[in-house]
Image 1 (tube, helix red, strand yellow):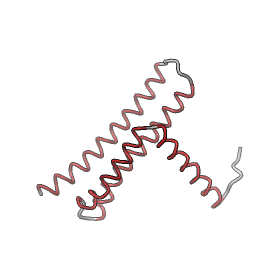
Image 2 (image 1 turned 180 degrees about the vertical axis):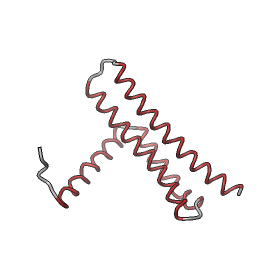
Image 3 (image 1 turned 90 degrees about the vertical axis):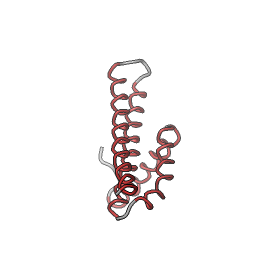
Length: 123
């Protein structure tokens, strides 16, 4: 079915759906709340740690990446939970894979932040 909303009106509706996604994830996912708080705490540190605009963008981008992956992981978990509460190995696999993706995003963030911190302190 084709959406009745086109042009700028579609953008407005899409922004509304995105906001609903943020709100529901904030409400139902403790990990997402923790990642948002981590972002808020590290934002001022990023100003101190970075020496160029590109470094600042990298520090912020990897934190946003963690939140993006968490949102996607939460979406996968919601769909799996909607399908049913009975254990199924594919449902477990999907949830574990989403969790692994979050872990990898944290490793990337740690590498970038750790490298910048090392460079700031020892270079």
